[in-house]
Image (tube, rainbow, N blue to C red; front, top):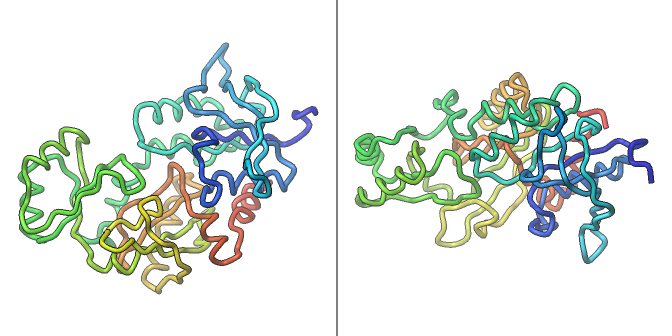
Length: 312
């Protein structure tokens, strides 16, 4: 088959066998692209290079299917000049580390030739947590620091707090601090992660958060994720249960403000989270998730919105 006669969608992601087809958004987007007669070229970040002034990746043409026991099939391996692609999706998991940053610099070379989602410059410029500092009036009390004394003052003021790394993901390395502060733990945490985010704990998290999907500057839908009993983590990877939900007027207003700002900053697809009608400060721009879960709950296919907005 001559793939060059077709639209090629490159996906930069984690190896397919590590993905969960029941919930994975990358697979969901790929299947819809296939329905639109696109071919999927898949590669891992480690296989991205600049060779002879061209951005190339060692990867493979791949076919995803929900009807097969094995949800993906590698069709042929190849080293591809990525400027030949129509679209490129940056979909690897954080942490947002130096390797992640390096891939954005490499992909900057072809962003005027290929539609990249999300724009690599924008991913690099928009810290998923620090970006929310511009919207702090809509958030619970929050500070960003690596000063143990500031953390201690914040704890005394707010009584129960959450601390989390600025560049982590999926609810990893999040600590609830109540009763008394463990300075040894905090110092070790800061040594490991650098600047951290400290936030007043919102007890209504036990009823769930809300993940809002923003595509091309518009609110497209939302789900709620209810932590498992005894947990304060609303990530599905941590056992939270997703349920259908609707946004309040306050949540809609805040979401529209952020959607407009993200579009202005060349972010096409993102997810933002609310707890008790307050923005929790995680603006997911690196590899937004939840579209397959939203479809399973509502039968609304936002992958169609995603590709339609790109003109596919």
